[in-house]
Image (cartoon, rainbow, N blue to C red):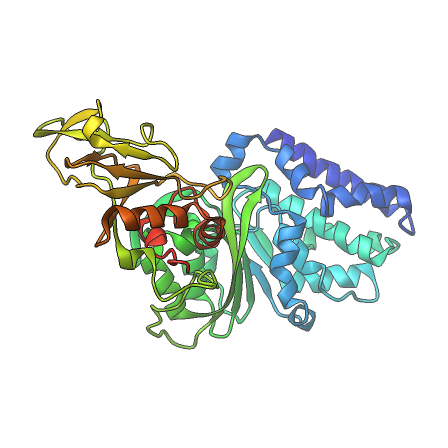
Length: 434
């Protein structure tokens, strides 16, 4: 954290330089800008090495994404509503919120009012200090004057922005507020009614936030896309929509060039009481131009059953296909395969299609598909999805191949699921385009 300490010292020194100037000139505006906008995330990121950022879950939100999250609340932010960030880090979201807050007639009064409205916690003391300095710089810049700064007791600034554990803090908050979150994305062992085992901290934070928030509170969050689309978070999604009404979901895409994770924005309002709302569609409008039929209506979609290096090679010998063996958009006849394996679990009889599970929204083709032919049962690696037609044989397999490599399907899948693998559910939902 030494580099980050240097960063906060630099912010403090900048504030001291500005104190001696009655008005901001161009020279100092150039100095302020990187701390607040444009290069702010880059400056913060450069102050910590990658391992430290990963350990802390600290992937700093850009100014553009922060503003995108807060802009829908620009009107209500003018009404002195409490704004709470339970995982504030160095404060990009609270800083974006402050840009919509009204100014008072002096800098000291503005900072005092902002201090009543803005609430945030983080476990890293240097992050809290950096946030306070950045808020002071934001207020200075908007006032275009520092003439009364000497009257401000800096030790008393922003008393509601403190060092604390976010989950613990949420259990003590009891007011109607606007909650803003870009929580840590790392995984932690957790046990809840909606899931257990290694769970994304982002899922835990949003669940705790909604559970503890007062009825009518609004929540705006930036979350990893796996929470929106992953099958293991289905119970979590039902839990969230039972407690809160979803105003909108927006697929964002890649978080930034330095964090290889796709994210989405969600806006919610805490309900007065829980309801059964398991049918809410988290997939936005991705079923655009869809027909009544999907891949799942015509094909049984399942995961290959061979787990390499884990399953014992016992039982009958079968032809064996794996992702490295299969040509994209091509065909394989298992009657002529040299690849064999002894296997004792489920095998698949051609014809069928395989689709690689590993798939990113940055790939040119989301569904890397191969047609498997032959008359012998086949063992299939678990890195592949198997699409076995209910009827229609080779003919319908070829039709499905054309559909899967269609650009329209690429676009659809990039809306449907942006994490780095395809699920049975996402492939099953692909519309059977006319």
